[in-house]
Length: 631
Image 1 (cartoon, rainbow, N blue to C red):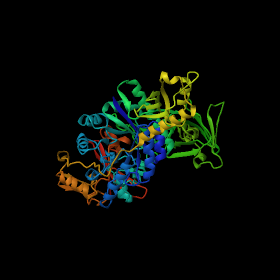
Image 2 (cartoon, rainbow, N blue to C red):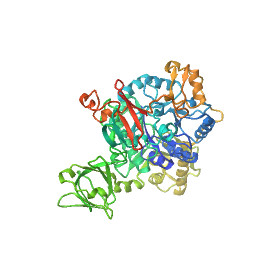
Image 3 (cartoon, helix red, strand yellow):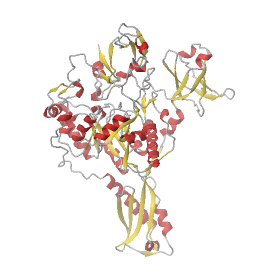
Image 4 (cartoon, one colour):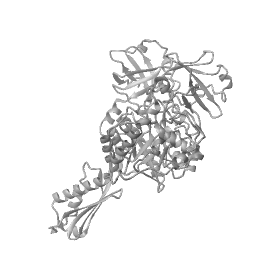
């Protein structure tokens, strides 16, 4: 059966543990250094704690070492990998190919999406270099994913399914480095794409007033998992290593349930890559968590509205429309089933395209109008004092970006995960032995007693009751096999309880025990010839930042290698973003679709920031891509 992996983000170990409890088969977390989210680093002791919890359920922990590496850091990275291997980390997600040349322990390397994996050739090269899993570019459609799977049928493909979207192909964005000297390839992205810009033409004519033209909606592919599986994806990745626990709980549970539904509908075809039954005290809902609106993002090979140009902030769930506005509050006509509460965060896009937000001081249902009357409290927002006609107000949709009741639910303990544990109580070599085996096949046996004393009456029910008391352990009782000759024995409850606890402790110790000798083991591989899969020259987008990576490419026959943008800014005026997203299409100016509309403005189009700096947009209609160039 094909194994399916739900891969959830972990800002820290506690959030990672919640992800496991809510159905993740694996989590990815930043190490102490060299992760593409510099603000999400974690200590080795915390990662070890996470590994222990994950391995209990057969789940895995991947550490992100997905930045480019400078020469003076190579030894430090090699040492860190040794430490991560020792504490039980299952794999590293990496960007810099220097790691393939290091003397590493036998730990799996996964190719980060920062490696810009968009073609079968790139996938084959990484497979030949020893990568055990690759993270595909978010921009790929189902047909392109299928082509990569056909070229590398044994290579596990990982693809994003939910969360924030970078407007540029990952690993090929240099806007933050260019503008703020903060490299996205070093985990320090300043989120240039979330900034406001005016869109102007070559003559300075306004194409679109100040907005957020590069700020994309969030990805949501929960309705397309079956298609992704059929295309060859086996690992489904949730973005969000900076997200909080409530976000991770909600979205992980949502996708875990979706995968379980697919497995149930296809008996004997798929299975989860870890074990344990998860139960929740809430109903997962994607739009209850931070989101900028949703998009499946090119998965179907079609373009839709991909951007959230009004705001880079969370709009949340659509809950209704405005009915009245005054200085005391608003009246909202809710959608069916919507309940509003004091403390809810609400927002709408005003007539000028700006996001206006407010908190509900009180929220009362009006029996006569069936609307919710919301009061502002002592400080009414400025926009509430602007008179608007009723017919205009009623066209304004209202969103809830903070649901107080849902957040209260998620702030509590909301998920449990239990492994089925089977017991057998039998006599072996004149001793009463308790054997336990969990659903992952891990087994342990403990001697209960050497004194086989007859009981006055059958003890089977008593034994079963004692063995079912699994309390706060990761287990729930499965089959309990009491041998016939044991039923007539007297065993003090304290003895059986102690044996039950000991056998469970042994099982858990076996689950996390590290049988590794990193001092003598090595992941180093002989030099692999992938020259036929490489071009003869590499420009700055190859992100070569150290001598090890340079030496690798030189040995593969690459004749010219430009240094990474972070080391040497190219002399020519080169693109700082490479995008599948097209702003002309987003604004209805695509020359393939609206030739007359496109002619209203003179090319090239530009973005003009609030600081006056401009950025030229270059469109490649043959590839249906867009580049952003500084001026």
